[in-house]
Image (cartoon, rainbow, N blue to C red):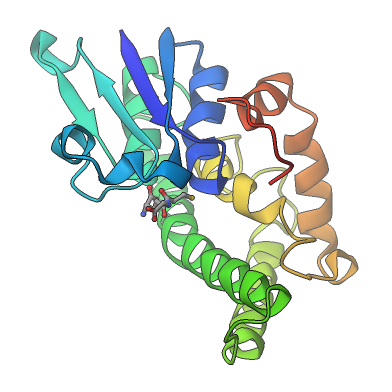
Amino acid sequence: MITLYSKATSNGRKASIMLEESGLEYTVRPMALEKKEQKEDWYLKINPNGRVPCIVDDDGPGGETVSVFESGAILQYLAEKSGKFLPKDGAGRIEVINWLYFAAGHITHTGLCVHWQVRNRDTGKEHAHLDMWQEENNRVYGVLDRGLEGRDYLAGELSIADFAAYPWIYRYDMQEIDLDLYPNVQAWLKRIGERPAVIRGLQIPPRDDDF
Ligand SMILES: N[C@@H](CCC(=O)N[C@@H](CS)C(=O)NCC(=O)O)C(=O)O
């Protein structure tokens, strides 16, 4: 059985969406980030990075227990285990890997920087780099918009690349992005956002604020 250690944050949601989409059996262990549970010794043993999400699979390769602790690696692991959302070989697989790394690098990092700078500004703290990160974020949305030209999904077919990108991009309002500038992204957000498994995954584990 797979155990998901997570909170419904942008990175956590990548894993919960994929678990819902894949149909794999799993249980959830909610993590209290505000109590710094992710920095406790027991958790650092399964995720040395001390962040969420992380999964532990007691039926990993060869029946061994494995832990997987980067959201991109979790998506790839679950795709390979379920045989869904990542072609086994060929050009289609390369296309998914391209966009998966783009999401894990550019989208996630830029989204996180904008997020914290906006939060700092709104609570009166230092946010001197907000303009710079918002400019970079617009560049990232531009790349996505070009990539989605003539396509329904980032790699052509629905894939883990879409699940890696969606939980950050659907927070475009918090990032103060004018979505009208990116019509292909707008259509893609609607397409992904209507999927029942995505709707469920966004709320796992449930949280009582509207983050
Ligand atoms: N590179 C990591 C980033 C994970 C990450 O930053 N998670 C945040 C929530 S979105 C977290 O756990 N923050 C709590 C902390 O920094 O202690 C991944 O993609 O899984």
